[in-house]
Amino acid sequence: MEEFHPHNDEMIFNADEAHNIVKECIENVLGKADYNHNKVNQWTAAIVEQSLTHLVKLGKTYKYIVTCAVMQRSGAGLHTASSCFWDTTTDGTCTVRWENRTMNCIVNVFAVAIIL
Amino acid sequence: MEGGKKRQDKDTKKLQEATYDGASSPFLCASISEEILNAVKELDYDRYKYVVTVLIVEKANQAMIVASRCLWDAERDTWVSAKCETDTFIALALVMACYYD
Image (cartoon, rainbow over all chains, first blue to last red; front, side, top):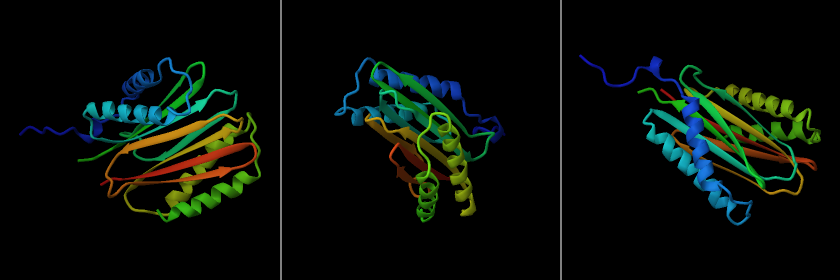
């Protein structure tokens, strides 16, 4: 008898794939734009939603959490740290840093496996 | 989550004394993240995985926006956030909990 669902020990989060997906989404949305207070809300929502949609298209049984922070470039410092309590063999994270002349953007993707 | 309030207080106490410092803030950020994770684990919920994210931003008259979206089970998974502001920086913590079988 054949089994069609993936075995748990074969599910590994592919961080490189996620990195590329997210980078592309950021480029699409922010591209050559300059920081614009009126549009920032739309941009962050677009980046996060597009990233999520593309990640889902990979077809893997994961729950995703995507956070995006966009900051105006002013020389100020920004630090981010995260801790996770999960199954390190199947779950993973990926962070993408992007910047242009007027703003910085950091996107974090956390993927938590669903065991069927 | 009820535990959210507890975490917010913990955050605030430790951070009120600190001032932003380019050298020590990365360590502060990471240590707060670990502390919050430990505090959440102590709440001892059964069958939950946690993700804690902490952001520390220096105040320099710049604007910033943080957004997030999650693809998960809306009935079982949830999140909580806490913000702490001082004269020199703002600290933001996000805790997400995902159910697993």
